[in-house]
Image (tube, rainbow over all chains, first blue to last red; front, side, top):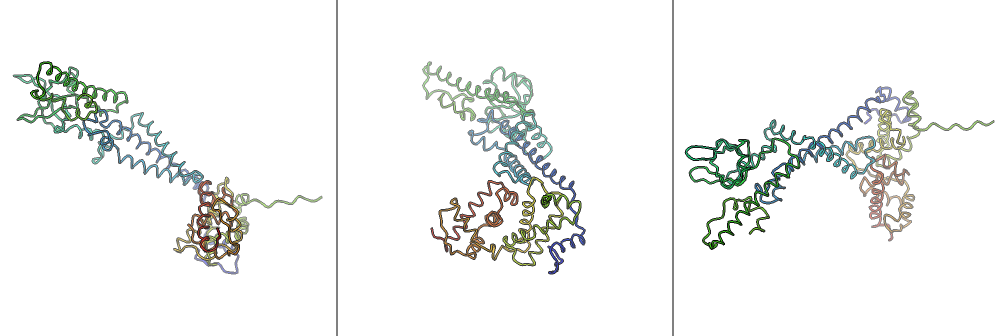
Length: 308
Length: 194
């Protein structure tokens, strides 16, 4: 507010020029306005770029997080989605879109566009950028480097480790360390916490045994039995694949492998029941079901109903 | 032979010349002093001293930011935008809301309201006086009031209102439509026959 009250006798023009002279008022340079406009656009671009990055990480997290084997870790698809949604990244995306919109509206002609058009275009640009970045594997890189550098950040790898190192729920993460201990053949598995398990591999297929024999980190699906010694009855062996950004083809393959494995256990159980019926063994006197046909992951599969 | 009359320089030309010779700015001040005084009064700056302060701030800001003038806009839209912003900051500084006579004559307003069927099918009592319209105007949301003032009292086109208020042109129509509805509702209670 003007502190020098203009004299009533003076015209506005005169008092204005007096003030221009006394306060040495000059028009601001063209360059400063140009810089200001550039800065607004840079912030807009930056927010779109960060928004794209959040989308890339979100796509990575949603597609990679346990989807292929979700029945092994979650009750159903809904609980899986609720658990898998990357809330922090979604929030970060929302903030970035908000910043982008605010900045766009601050550009010279930004106000001419409707809010909906600006929101839609900012979201669309971030989504397109996110898909492109994820295509080049940036989602995985950002997630894993944050996981390594920021203590509190639960990267995909950390989450997968947490989900699969759960023996009480029939999941183990680790690698086979010995496949023969005298005097009788045994398979020893060391989990992610360094605990050793004797594996019961009677229900495994040859390719699963081969995968175990590579001594690479794998995920085991089965049932833990605590009878003096820790024994893990293995029903499936799946490669540990979070150390890289998986392609959709690989994810599909992993999903197929898991579903086939579940089917296989169900088919075997069905066959077993058929043979028993043929031999005249009544359902009451039948022995217990096969362990693998009764594990939680198998029971959760919707295909189970068709086989019962 | 008679020489063709020379047209006065446009506002935009004066802006260009002011950047070389600041005394030219005086002409812009003279051109807009009355218009902007009327406008800020309509926005609610009632006190004469306050008006002078606000006007001086408007012209100083205009002068300082001459290089930011976007030639794709009309100069009048740009200076009205500055005036609008200054009036808003004045309210904020003073912590007041607009009061008093926003308009001098409600006849024009009434003709607008009754001519347009988009807001409501109403006919207005011709005995409505400026006082009633003023009171009703003060009661409506400020965003609607600002649009109505620019459209019906400053006679600005939608495009210009869009540039002054920094909103999309489509939103200008919406603001006017809703503003008129609110205004009609406010007037309806006392002075309108439906």
